[in-house]
Each structure stands twice: as structure tokens, then as C-alpha cells.
Length: 360
Image (tube, rainbow, N blue to C red):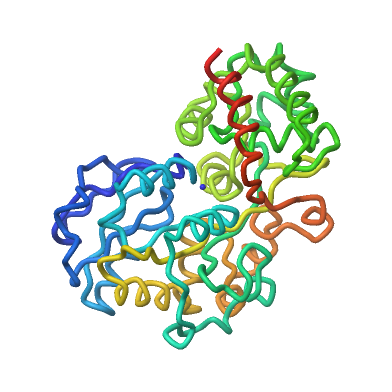
């Protein structure tokens, strides 16, 4: 998942979509200009969760033109919607814990399952996920873990846990990055200290904050996107990242290796939801049904380097992907991972310490 995140150039036809490097060029797509169009579908998602081939295939099947805007965190996305900036979008890709927060804010429609084709294609654990019983509001698109991507050429000893960063902070000085994500970063340190990713004990949060203040002088940046080009250029030795991004980047340089810290990490699912304010609900259902097709799910998994929750699509993948533990970690690793959960008002505690950390 990169600033999981840049912008497909605003266009009126797919033929003019332009991809630039690892991300997409920014454009100004305003909420007020296309709110009544039913021949277009606006999606708000993470970077590299779509590409021109995918959009063209959908347009060929449905006749709908797709325009995609991207965000760098769930919190940025939610803030934009709550500020009234989401009037254009019909379909959003929130992470698992954000789904309930959006439901609580009355932002999502309850999905009509009789309008969905292919729900039975999902792995059983994704047909009734803990974060959204019976997929009432969301359909899973991608899942993965959070870990560390390191340059094995300059760091021959593989990091085994999060504490590697502290133990080697002098070597890694200004050549490591952490995600720009309060729940991921605080959660990782909480796990390192033996606590839950979802701790609601302020003393534990404070301990995590204090550990991070020790490390902060050696951190190059809290970043979710730019680290990719930097680690490929050799400017970084190690980066905290999402597995989907790690897999893509390591394809460009096989010396970059991904590890899930042994004390545990986060297990996340990014989903597809339809906004109550959606100007094109029919188009949003068409997009979800398109994504539930096994052939589409398999193609996306191979091309975009993401782990599909679609079992029928998984069966179509080549063995080298099925057996790739970065894509599909063994149960022994997954058992140590936690899903990030909404914490209600206690999230203010995380935000307070995060603001102190990142602004000082």
C-alpha cells in the first residue's frame, strides 16, 4: 500500500490516462464537476491498486470510464470525506479498521448481496471477516502484512524484529524510514514491547512514544511513498512498509528483502465500499463485480503484486506466487499478527502522542 498513493491524470477518456514512474501524476478533479454523470466512475483508492490495463478492461466490459484519485492514509481519506470533499467519488478503498469508522459516520451504503456476483469466490475467512460481519458494507480487495524491507547487500544480517532498528540506529542513521501512519508505527513498537497493536492502556502508549523519541534522530522520515525510489537508489538501508509495496520494489532489485518481525505485526485488508453520496451506485456495483471475477483477481495479483482474497483467483496463480511467503505468509507467522481495530475516543491518545513525536 505506496503514498500507496499519487493521482491518475484527470481525463475525459481512458486513452489519455498517463502513468508516470512508480506513481501517477497529480491532477485536479473537482467534486462538483461530474457528480451527475452515470457514464463515469470516480474511485478514491491507494496508489498502484489500479493500472491502465485494468481500467481499459473494465471500460470494454461496461462502457464506463474510470477516473482514480489516491490518498496516503485512511485518516487523510476520511478527513477529506468529512470535510465534504468526496462528492465525486462512488467507490472507496478503506482498510479493514476504517470500514466500521465510516459506518459509524453514516458514510456507507449497506451492500445488496443480490446485486453482487462472485462472493462465493472469496476465501471463507473473507466471507465473514471480523471487521465487517457477512460483508455488510465492504468487499475485500487485497490483504497483507506490515514489515521491514532491507538492503541485503549493505545489511547482510537480516533484521529479525523491530528492535533491530534501535540496536543498529548508528549504522542506520538517516537511512531508515517509518510509515507515516500513527496506528502502524505505534502498533509496531507496542508489539515489540510485548503489548497489543490495539492497546488502550495509556501507560503502554507512552512507553511506545518514549522508545520512538529515542529512535527519531536517526529516522530519515515518516513516509509511506517516497522511500521506494530512495531505497532503490541506495539512499536508504531499510524501510518500514506494507508487504504489497515491498514485493513490487524487490522485483526491481532482488537484493531488497522483506521480513515480518518475529514479535508480530499488523495484518491488514483493504476493501471496496460504496458511499451513500455516490453519484454512480450502479457503476460501483459493476466495479465490485468486475473485481470478483477470478480471472481479474488473478491478473491483478500477478500484475500489481498484491495478495488476493479471491480463492478462485488464487487457484489460477502460478506456483511461484502461491508459494511466495511474502504474498501468502504461513499460519505460524500470521498467528503473531493483529488486525488494527477502531478504538473509539481512545484514538485521541494515539494522535496526541503522534503529534508530539512528529512535530518535535
